Image (tube, rainbow, N blue to C red):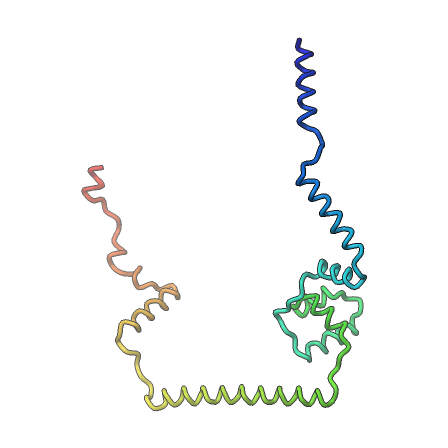
Length: 192
């Protein structure tokens, strides 16, 4: 009787553990096979791009390099060809994909293009200096006419002073005499 019961359990167990895949699993398997076949049919350049994306990640540089830095990177690679792009990227603190693209690029500006680049840089520098000069003159104009003044005795100044002193670790609220009193039992504490 016990053996028949075991046989019944084993039969039930075999039925519940059948390896027949569900519809969702079949769909996922077919989808994976289709993706694999599609990847095999890709042109070589797309396969290479995919491999680079896996290796270096997506290329979206947040740190832009100047032309001089790009020249320095190329010279650095010529001086130390045994270094990998990842090591150079760590040295210059940029994405390895940026280094790879810089080293791959052979573009150098022509004389006319270089003149335009230098002119634009000079204009940017002049505009920046002009802005700085104007902001200094405005500051001197407003403070120069009024002369040195003590801060007003209004609530905003006091509030700012209290805030800044709290940031420095000198909280005036904590040094008040009422906070320095030791704890004493009250009548309510004694009754409980």
